[in-house]
Amino acid sequence: FSLGHAGFMLIGAYTYAIFSIPAASRDTVYQYYDAAIRISFPEVLGNALGGFGTVLGVIICVLLAGLMASLFAYLIGLPVLRLKSDYLAIATLGFAEIIRAIFQWGKLGPVTNGSNLLKSFTRISNFKIGTFSMSTFVPVLIATVSIILIVMLVNSTYGRAFKAIRDDEVAAEAMGINLARHKRLAFCISSFFAGVGGGLFAMFANQAQAKVFTTAMTYEILLIVVIGGIGSITGSVLASFLYIFLSEWLL
Image (cartoon, rainbow, N blue to C red; front, side):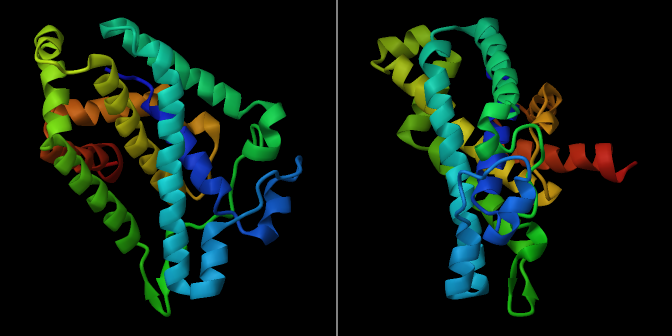
């Protein structure tokens, strides 16, 4: 039971933003620092392949966002996954807050821009092939592929091992399942998709700033999962629409 997803979404959002800010905008965005990373995958591939290259560059940035979140999850998981139950939840919550503070640290300014927001990167409204707008298609495509991958994972041998550990750790271990390895794998995979979600959130919000990714964001995710039914992928998808309808559209 992890309460650190806001932290992993933060990592994903920053990774996506950092690797998609155009070269001409870097000095404006990093006005107080000398930007350490100056490559923009959507810009490079867009110049070479046009609109398709921009979309391809965005997908690469989103994958990098997920992989970077997984890397942090692996490092965090080494000490944290030794804990169980409420202690694990509290530890992951603490790490999420630590990550949020570190990303605002001035010493990391050349990479994260300190406490200042990242902007001017590739946004949803930039997705075009010729005159055809792909502002809806690309995020829906990424979300759909993510859901398909999760369904395939749940129905695989690894997914069955995850469910066995969830139901009874002692019985799962007696059946020969490596608890530490599978827990670490589950933690990294879930963090990967949280990082992808952070990248999509940055596209939608048109900016990335650490102070936005508070524990309230994690609670919103948990609320969606509980409303949809724990363990139900379809329920979580439907509950996300219901939650946004109640919290945003209804207002």
